[in-house]
Length: 194
Ligand SMILES: [Zn+2]
Image 1: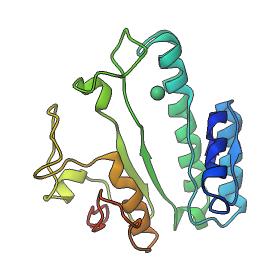
Image 2: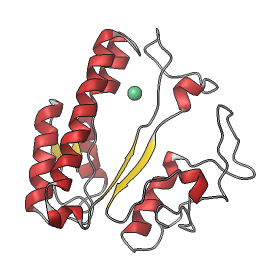
Image 3: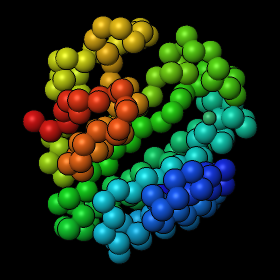
């Protein structure tokens, strides 16, 4: 696990023995470098990389501020470094799948994200890329899910793809059962490969 905020030291205490390597570096370029080195040298089943720069800049200077835009550009380049490191290594390219998401957005001109009815706050990316993944739209591939557009569906009826689905998407890709007691995608039916 590689994280950009020191508060996440608590993960090591919260799940003793569950995380075999917890690296925390507030400087994102150093963190990403360490994660890439780990990908190349260690045979982990799962690597979690938390990039904090856009969040820190947004909470500090506001969403869509110049420092925020800089942090987003930096993070875009860092994602490219990870993807390029995987593409350049045949062994990694043959087996690694990257799942990318965020926990919240933000309204330009503010530095919080507390209004849960604003799409700018709750709309997040969810991308899946890598070994065996063909380009396509998650909603085309998953007719049981409902593309929300700019609406905000509740928890009844057909569901949009939510970042809460990721735990069981990842356990599915790792070929292990769902997270015990979980509710999002508990049947592991979110399909990312044809
Ligand atoms: Zn935040």
